[in-house]
Length: 222
Length: 213
Image 1 (cartoon, rainbow over the protein chains, first blue to last red):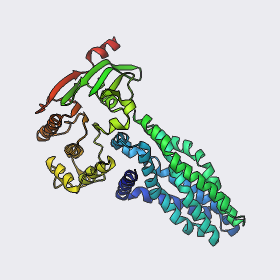
Image 2 (image 1 turned 120 degrees about the vertical axis):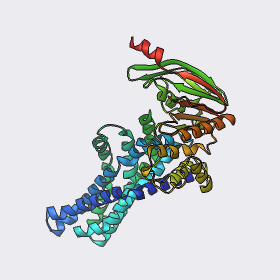
Image 3 (image 1 turned 180 degrees about the horizontal axis):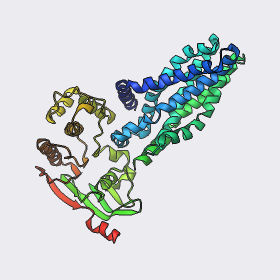
Image 4 (image 1 turned 90 degrees about the horizontal axis):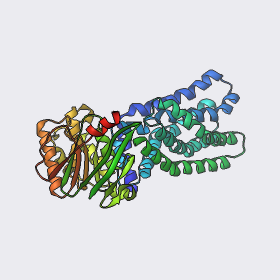
């Protein structure tokens, strides 16, 4: 079981390394969107500090959205998805591997960049730490929940827009608790509660999402 | 072993075929024929369990394939008309990663031997997107060399292949039949398979016409 998940992750990471333009594009999108806000809103530190959690989290959601359509589309186009669906192992495990690989490629870079970008918003050290931690806990949920949407819109014309309409509302709880954690630190309330809820969402997203995703993929392959 | 009874395929509002029944034992091959759009690929996808049949039933060793699930899939090797190879990976990486995903460990020497057999030695380190259509097909067919699963379902295996490769694939199919395996394939070419009992089934003509009239 673990060796199957490892094999899927290994394959997807290797493919991502051969196609680095995709990773770079989503990461640069994140950097640019976040950097535009201080330029547009003006340099008052108080205002920026208040905006920071929301801006960084919304940018993270949008950057994740960018890479979602290709999660299954490439495999669908070249026929490998059929092969995965016909493998004698549960498709949900394969999906879990793909979700983990997607997070490593699309989610982890955001986590690494967040503290650097947070400095532009004059966030204090503890707020930066919580921001990074909240993204570290929350981005796996984005990959997991997003996989359901990517599978449901697989093969649909104009699927990209439909995918955003489907998935972004489902991201709302992650956004609220993720940004809320940073807000709570800035106002001195402590982020513990928000981070716990975020952790629960991530666990649910990563470990329960593969089953509906696998069901949706089977429908898409019919 | 593989038994289909009264299969019906409906696509949208059109009935592609109905009342298709056959029985295939070990060592037998079913060659599906029929004009374009007669439902050959749909029938193959049904046999794999990818598409549910509108009516009728498919049984493997006496039990419906929907019930068998993973047990049936572990006996099945499907090669669609898409090659299922990754353009970014080399033929060697493709064959190794396919084997790893199927949980059937294949060492590098065996993989290289398979590539040599299909004539891709010397190209094994070249990303597949630089290969020609026929070479990509060869890379996809290389997995048949070490394939031990009992039921092969091949959709147009000879497309894009030159004559030598066609004969090679026919040889692989023949060897598989000789081992007691089963093969279902679609083709528009008359290719002689060196061993095994070949049966033919032509889809379409009468059924499709009836529907249109």
